[in-house]
Image (tube, rainbow, N blue to C red; front, side, top):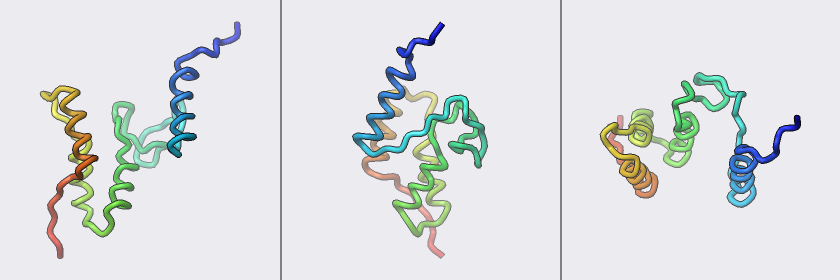
Length: 111
């Protein structure tokens, strides 16, 4: 029996990936059944429950905010990825959106 071309991957995931690549110049990576885990893995995730690609996010924080000490990047990353169990999903999304839109405040000491 030939598999149906009307799968979630074909109808949703691949269509969305194609749109993001063609219209927004995003880079897509299909990692299903190819991902291993660890700091040097394909996506740099510790396990399959880690949603945010922290390795990529940290690199972008450094690129967009050069010259800060590592503690500043660590603090910014922590604020972006940490969630509160008592907060609703909507409240968490609003909080993270605000951080991305307005910036993350970090403190550090110069030498």
